[in-house]
Image 1 (spheres, rainbow, N blue to C red):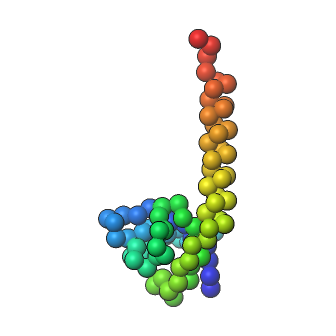
Image 2: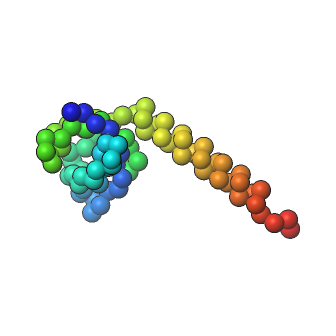
Image 3: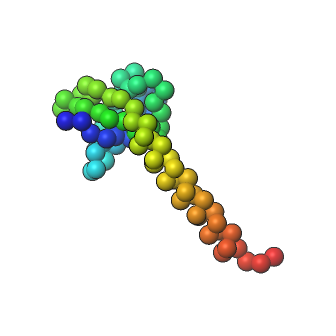
Length: 88
């Protein structure tokens, strides 16, 4: 079954921690098993056989959608921070 996953972090330059599915199950996989250019924050479509990653492809639409959502939230937080600063 194919699921969505995000690369949470890369550790020791050889492994990636994936958060898989809605429950964000954690899987540590060899970095070489992931598509070229995949890095922390990249969204993937993945298939596992038990604990073994059997297929992974980059999901560029989901990666961009989440990046945009985070960017908008950061902008809102910055604007709120400016409104909360005391007058100088």
